[in-house]
Length: 252
Image (tube, rainbow, N blue to C red; front, side, top):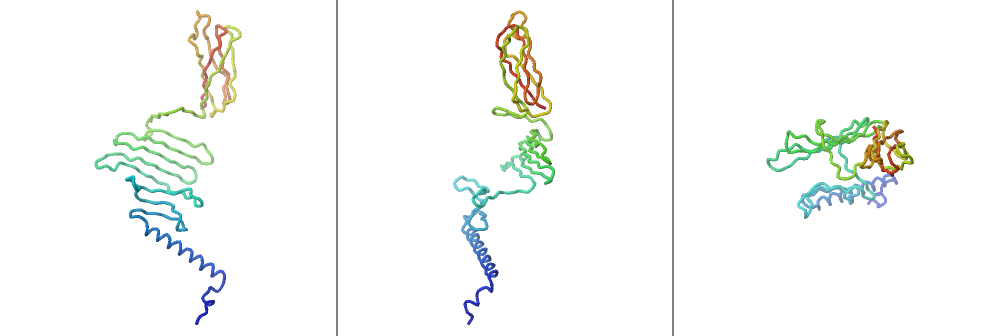
């Protein structure tokens, strides 16, 4: 009769392999058991341990809907859902509904560029869709965001809030003349405007612009020394009244 010792693997390496195979079979059995026990119409995907739920596809109980849920960024398993380059399309499913699909498109040559394009749908085949393109370029070049209509047609953009941009700067300064009808200036520093060439504008806050008969009017406002870091604002007035001057710089 074979001894119990004879039934053991001949060495530690063989024992480790047997143990690993046994653990793998147990995980597979757990996963299969969970799949069998899953509710009807629901597909669940588990990690290799057969316990950690990664994703499920099925109805949303109590809400009358359904879909695909991923359980990303779990500890210790951080998982993501990947799609290859391609296109996802969306359109109404109502009977008789005619619509041009909306789409999310990802395209890349994996070397020089990547494009993520969001395209709205519409309910008339003759209408233009809105297109938002997020584009990155090769070797650290500046990325671009394009907002336009389909096929390069115009597209309106409505910002519900304060619009800011790295190539715009604006503000106000107060100027108090020391001598009437003699230009006075102040320098604005500390700006950080994007661009290589810069254009500045200035406007005095006054109800007496260029009034020669009031002896109190603002007869001139100007700027110079415009750069990415600042500008000089000038004003001439017929009196010694402190005056606010609004300014703006745009970088191109």
